[in-house]
Image (cartoon, rainbow, N blue to C red):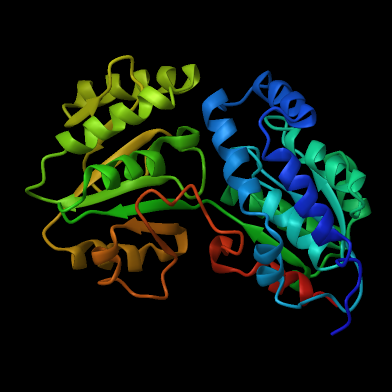
Length: 352
């Protein structure tokens, strides 16, 4: 399969990523400062983590391995609509479009309008393909294929717009609501419990990979996990908006007599009950009699679950086909992870 515009993209991406790995790089510093001034739930600590994590993944070997020699037969304008729930939410889609030889036409969320455009500018200055960012109003007039992430309701609206714009189903990759799940067996180490805290609380629970439901043995006391959550919040303080929303939720739990625990200052909230996803930052603790009980529920809810996190011994008891990771890695996805189980590069190289 012939290579197209992706050839100059890899060295340019590697060079730009290396620059952005430096926390003092001027273009990164400016983008961070402008991002933190927007109406979002990003914190300085979590934003720095996200940037460091993302750009440390962009090595020459990782990019070439992910691409695996694949390229598109012809270049089309691929429009990418991304949510701004976590920092750099659209980075993987941006990379995939460039690497497969397509033209990138993106929109940015009002909550995070600076990071991806600033990095895209860096890539073009390093000799890589340019990217175009347009308003949502102009978006569908500019694109031939669509990748979009958001709520299920947003996805339905985007599908309708695709219909009206004549973009066929085969040229759409629309992702909906997803969340992460953790399965504990009570043998977790201090380090693994701290990893669970990162999986659940980083980015204020806003991401599709954030652990929202924790399955734990009936006899397991939550205290060591709560202590790990508190330690994590000592390094990654909660955003003020999170503490405000959790205060209201805690008041409701207290009023209805639901068992729950929270940190001083409402830096996190954990409630015990049925396996139901709560508001971001509010983690649901669910008791199980055996790991298989949790696995049965996960099978039933597979369409809504992005990732399952557990320690290695527990993962070995779960189906290999599930998207999974060890505790502490939900917020550290590899470059080639497949959101909603769909290979983005495969989708893009299949466009005709």
